[in-house]
Image (tube, rainbow, N blue to C red; front, side, top):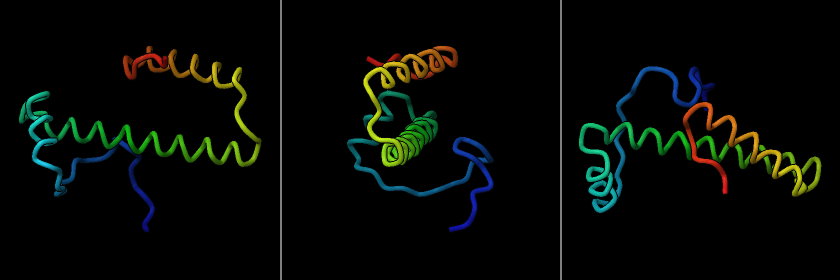
Amino acid sequence: MSEMPYGIGEGPATRVSLSIPEGTAEAIRRRVGKREFSAFITGAVERELRGQILDEYLADYERRNGPVSEPEQERARKIFDEVFAEEGGWPAAS
């Protein structure tokens, strides 16, 4: 696999082909309209990739340091909530 020249969400748009169930495609069209279909898919894929990277990081951290304690988890939630609130991004963790 070659080195990525761009990070997630960076670089020029590139055309790709994908297949998804018609019901899923129709639900997306109803929610965002035909013109925003690609942006919706792009956002969903970027969130999934970032989530997988975070999962991999946490698994590696726990392998090296043991389980994350409850106080550490709560501290992380607060940090994520603050960062995402500043960016107007993800909703606060529950």
